[in-house]
Length: 317
Image (cartoon, rainbow, N blue to C red; front, side, top):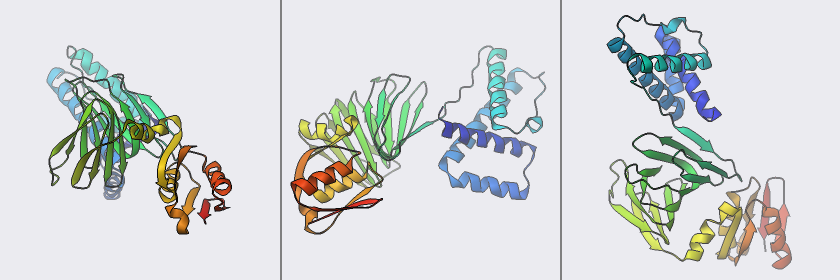
């Protein structure tokens, strides 16, 4: 379990313990503020509360002679509470003939600017996170669900028709139909590039279009708010779009303004292009995390003016 997720759950356990012994008015307000501050707080709180409620029901049904352990007498340490909760659930599983209460939390993965991360789920599916990406994964016996909060990720899915692999990104649900694909989410925009197989993309939560679209290998699904479009592209463009997996950026006669914007996704030092230089077109392969080297090529090869500060690289004619 990632440290950040563990912290959410330890905090939630602490609130549940205080809630059991009774909250003062100020504590009740503090709990409400904590729940409203972050969706992860609310998820951890509700999931842990559901587990303990199910445990109480099983204990009442199958072990009427057992004396309840009052949580109010437990030391209010998140780690201790979790150990007791885990042990208690194990006792229930054994005591009632193998009835198991199973809690499957979301696991969050995050990359910073310029970082990538490779993970492998328990089903063998491989995921690679691009720069500045936040993603959660949750697996259980019936489904595999990944939520892309922001950023971009590559998926190499182990296909299982009876246990669909789903990616939630914004107001879109992307379902694997045996494939390798990338998903990129920027604000209200979701782009899906299919490398192998096919995907189904549909709207969530009663969105206006509600229509499903299918994309196959060599196609890109572009979703903007209520609209979704499937477009064909060349294998080379698909390859270029996934070059970040090798730490590279590949451009083919794109404007310097667009190139700078892409570099800025991977670097704290931001590239700023001003004047007529913004419309210059060029191509090539460059290291994503070395904008200084790219700026040096512009200075020497195109005779552009390059000014560098601690936080930016300013390029002009």
